[in-house]
Length: 246
Image (cartoon, rainbow, N blue to C red):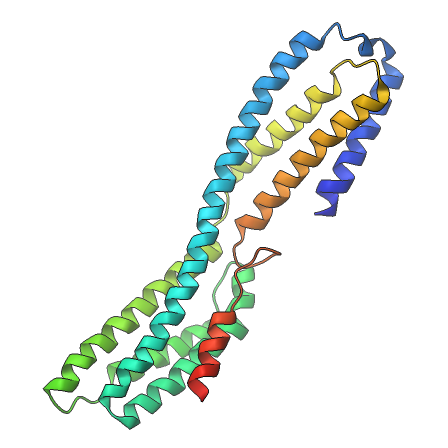
């Protein structure tokens, strides 16, 4: 982040100083009309692409938050519905939910930072699934609740898969290439605008570099919803595990 919002503007200003020193005639502004037109077109393309990426990634980030909330909600409902199948079944389901939720928070979250899943957490989920599938049903009333329990475990599986899919999704390399090229082009055109005041020109190109660097940092932060300063945290899983231990 420091490289993008500090080093990039400093490098741009230094490059602007070098250009003014090597080509002092460029500050008379005779090329401003062409540079301004082309720079405006490139800047517009850059703004559209980055804006599209930020909106898409923000929606993905919101989906990750929703997936975590849904998964933990389904875990709580699973325990609740299992209570209708008797104390023994209820206790077994609670134990498996506590183990699975704890494994998600401690094992799978670090794995998602690497865009993968945790084999240990997968085993805990499989054990939870097997426990639910083997719950004894003694009468018609319990059979109705069994359907609700099975529906909850399916919902948990779907929410978990959505969470893992979001953790492994990335921006295509070709899109990153377009963003980087348009960023460099926008900076490049700003360097060749002719302005008499050197101080004003340094401020202008530095501001452009800061904005570009900050937008790239924002895209990087949003690209991986389970890592970074804007990350979705595993606190809901810790909370459900703590609640079910009581």
